[in-house]
Length: 433
Image 1 (cartoon, rainbow, N blue to C red):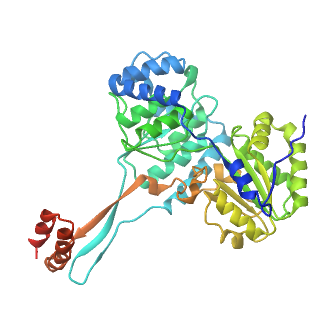
Image 2: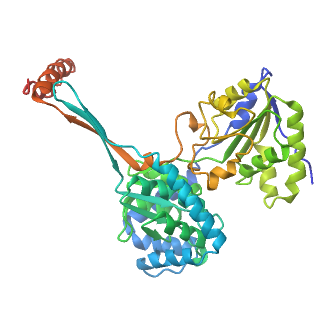
């Protein structure tokens, strides 16, 4: 098997910024053909409702649905999936769910208000969404961990009804996915997928309720559909390929670092794994570990394509420079595999999730550490955050003016409104003076 020679970058090189940009570049441009096909699917679902869902499911997922009632899984089916799990899987799911729920409880926003001297009350009212939709991939790409990460924050937020959609190619369901839905408190589950499922959640059909927000991962058709229904409903994010960036001082076992890089590279060929170190010899050691460990990996071909096509080793002069590069990249997952991760974390401004210390593998965050694994990708951590309870809560401003407060504020509003030539605004305020 041909050895992998990792792309090496050095931030002291005058062309470093250009070379880094080229490696980070991700062509997220829309495929116009897919765009048009998804538009047609959305339009058909809006027009034909349940019948469109039945037709698309039978066509794309090779199912044999005859009536819309067959699309929904009963609560008994979810409980049966949970009851039939092997003990080890059930315990792992339960523990992960408890940890995700415990973390999410700390994220809940609370309503607040204060009273000014004249008796005017100002505040903020926090309320949960009425309905949320959760998309879950089906078939080979079945991720019960994603069910927990998306559903539990919604339930902790107090969402009134959580609707899950999951395709069942060839009529096959995944027991762990259904069991995860059961213990996470999902209210209803429909066996549909693809762009048609997103359209159903956004606009509703005779059987499937329209929701206020759609969350969850999916393929290019699902991602495109989420883009196109945004505005009708809220969405969590448009996620790009998985990413991991590791900063290491050269003192961690190189096999550990290699496997941490693999943990994201095995997702798909476009995933990105980057290692930054101030120790050039250590970079050589990790490259040797990569080539030693790769032949035993089940997804060796995918890892190889990812590491050679999008991976990189970056040499810096010191760890402070490493954090500067990390902030520039704004990675989805950032591992600080160093002696003093707290000090280094203080210099990090842009990252989806920060894994601190040599023992904190990113994989723990994917499954059971507690914080959400739905994270911003493609440098969007510069301005966005992990999925959380706050994504399922909304805020309303509260204003309750006393007579005195209305009089004083009315004078100010009058001047500003007349300055904008909005006379009705001004007179509405002036009536209360």
